[in-house]
Image (cartoon, rainbow, N blue to C red; front, side):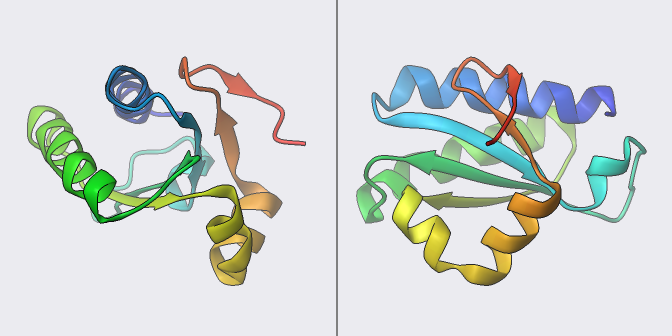
Length: 112
């Protein structure tokens, strides 16, 4: 996995863990799973929370924007509760098939 992606995961996990008590971890999916740099691709991430609402999104987007600016990347972040995630069949199926799960500390774990 490119070092930039590792840094994104680390920074997002640290910021979300500090900001949200209900942060459960994140999934990396999409083009970056092949371990190569992709100049014109976003880093696709699902972030899981116990509660996902407008107030939380208002706090999430400045965090994402700061990391994008700091690292010069584009992050396509999907904030969900577990239920919302499972109901978004297109993304859920793709992530469950190929995605990588990182716990709240940013450590990769088996997603099953």
